[in-house]
Length: 239
Image 1 (cartoon, rainbow, N blue to C red):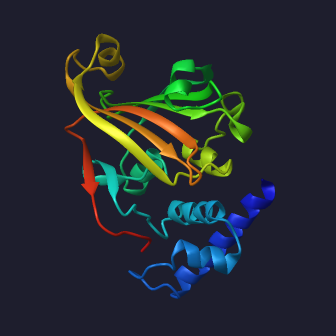
Image 2 (cartoon, rainbow, N blue to C red; image 1 turned 180 degrees about the horizontal axis):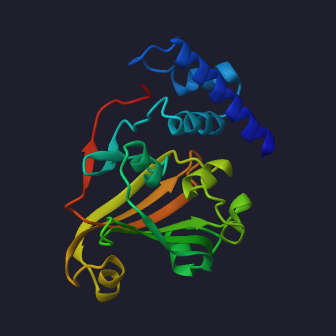
């Protein structure tokens, strides 16, 4: 894995230099994934890790051809970069309170996702406005396999879960989700400093790698006044 990490960073540096030097002019697209994997002689997973690095540097943005994305007050939130970074890049401060970060056993979720492992990294977070009112409650579950086993014990080291997933080679290729509206129960309302029964968006999503394996399962409660779900269809790519 260290060699792979080094390789995708090397590819990212080459492409970053080309973007900054004008080889890929503003508004033009990078070559497609197939062309880039052939050029650098790497797998699609390694290439997508390199593109992730470019996205984190703000040099490119990636969009699924058909899919959906979440916005906060109109700001798109890219799950591959992590919401905290996406908000910070727009100058939006939305403090995060970590409620839980530990390794858990969840046989029901393992059955639902058809996984052999029942061990998950559990990360529960509340995002709040400056006055302490919660606008989102997010519960992430990541299969604790490979390099991710023991992540909760080691900690994120000041980074994000998204960064830890990429470092472990767990790159999201596709996702699916279900959105509904429901009232907050008493426990959720207390965590969010809201009123029981208040209507929130309920978003359940599963993100998968290129080989179809589960990268992350996320269940979110989102304030519909601040968050919106946008659905997009058509062709897309990297600018």
